[in-house]
Image 1 (tube, one colour):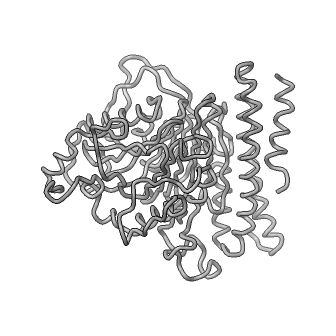
Image 2 (cartoon, one colour):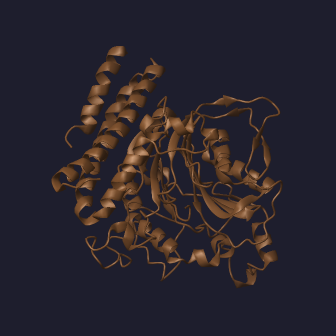
Image 3 (cartoon, one colour):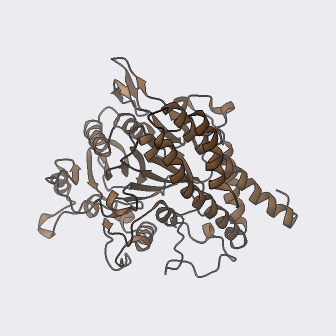
Length: 489
């Protein structure tokens, strides 16, 4: 086994890398029969602007004593679970609604801001919300469906504190969109296995059939409450959750409808009329089996080739100064694609493809759930954050976040001249990463039962090496340009 590990690492790296404010957010979910390898794919852009920091932790499984509680910012105290699962945590300590998670069961979680029309919410004990809410799901859910039921139970017990959000919860078998309303109302819909669904920043669930528990879950009085508030009149047509519960202004805002449409038009089998003509569908059948690459192309979108793209050239106005509400936007400070596969150990089958900052100018780096430790380049500066993710107060950028952020800013300074070379570099890296994935997984799976610990070390070294390579490439791209132009940073 030692000989295998000694030989495997150089082979993988040579194969992979030789030769060259939370007002936004955006998510894509593709069902397992809509993808090329039978996985559930979940893509997400986190849009929080450049002044906030981000870093990754790996939190181990924990046992808890009877009588322990989880304390929320609102003052609500929730009984602790006997056991909390291990998870990868992309943390943004300065923002309450922006953390992403991937737990030991392959359950991935992120959220999109989706304002509701609720103006008189019912809350108990201060309610539930903020970063701890989604962390509770990561710590306790062993499947996406279990996560939806747990979140719904917490909402009905305590009440949701924000105006509204869509929590996306996926595992290797199912992808769910959970629409949460300020107070104690919620509804969730499963993305059909052969469809792909997209969320910008307004609810997308319309028809609701709570009798169909395979595909819908939600508050029992969802329609009754809407009638009581005067939001829904049954005599005027069928109930639509989006039309009834969404904030009327954000539900039709071009920044939301145009982004959802632009993703759908890239992926859909059939033409999707623009939102000015008709309401967009909850989900569509894709034109071909989807891969990680399909989702990353959407997450990098600036409306290129559409009527919504500004007429001036990139040489006149950089991509992120032309339009504030593109999918890859001025506020995007991380982008993720969760590749969630069954039929193999979850440590190998669940891969978090992570890009820091705007993904049009930075690479997606594959991180295996089975890695023992998070790459140091992705963490916070230890001098300011310590070693505890639950008590980070004044963190500083880690190397990857800082350097890839510098690269993203540098590209925007002269987008037209710089983006071509940068995109070519990252396309080579991402293609080589995809090619290396098959070789890596064939080898580690063949030895999984022989020496699990050693195989985890391989996954760790591979993931760490990818991040280190990306950071070095970013430095090189900026340094080479400075040498050629004589620029001084």
